[in-house]
Length: 438
Image (spheres, one colour):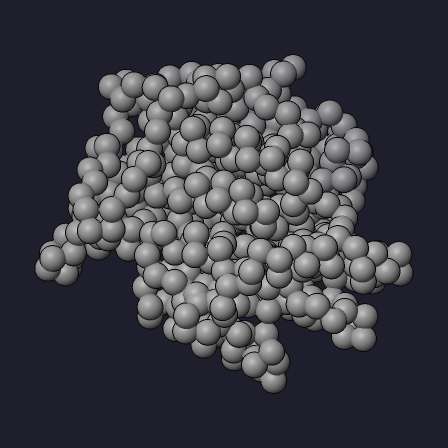
């Protein structure tokens, strides 16, 4: 995965200077939207993509649409075929703008576990992080150290040490005035934002309970060991099946249902809970892997407010992705019907046109870069991730876990050094009552 010829340090400084001053100031004063007129901007924003799967490809497409002069110049992945599919898809999506928008030279296609650093060093202005989340903290640290603006997919870590590193680096990013946008996409949905404005504005009274469901099918079931190609290393096999290993994905609650967990955090004004308890396990046997296929977490907040998150990834079951927010004056329901609604003393239904929340994330990011505006989602993206990790800890151990315990946990799932050709033995499937909190 590689870009065009890396820019010199002076080139990078000149580009950053332009983005902070020059035309950006005029654009900010004029109030231009994220997609800027060609007559107003003469300098490109170079984009580097780390992780060329479906989500990474989607993020790159949205980044290229967010600014008239955003250009993809560098990509990284573990597989050449994945890069090929990604670039082909992007060129189709960009249509007649493909040559101007997708400018990834062969020397800027980087392969391997260290490819992210090569993208960062290639002269890009913005880095899109879309690899399995176990890799995220270290990649985030490297991008912040290099002074890059960031789009960071959710979740941002799989363990508490990773969360602490992200929180530390977020403060450094803030000091450097770097823009950081998180892939917690519901925060960028206009109709969900308006719904939470209604809820937090008192339309349902005081919140007393929140029930969120994330019941779906497996993202990527673990294949039989007999299908593993001869000579493939443990690490490669695990990464190619990353969704089945906690050190790579964090488990279903952390990797997928974290969207629901993030909405709980939003409703609780991003203040942490006191503690949580959880149940869960593996109902459908799988050959290899160590994640649960179902969990339910009970979070305790101040004033005896409770939040419940149910997560399941088993075929043939009832599927639902919904939120039920119960207050003293009414109930808000999201996901059971085409539009959110509030029933009770002050009924309400969202009226208006829904935006594309995935696109809006990037529109906001690139507008902030152009306007030297400054946006940083780092703290809440890290804390919502920890909220999900906390629930997994409670389910895996069978213990009550406090917020302070979760934040200060020493359990390190993701290894410091991972060798593509090497061996790595993840911990066995957790057994509540036997698996210890670390």
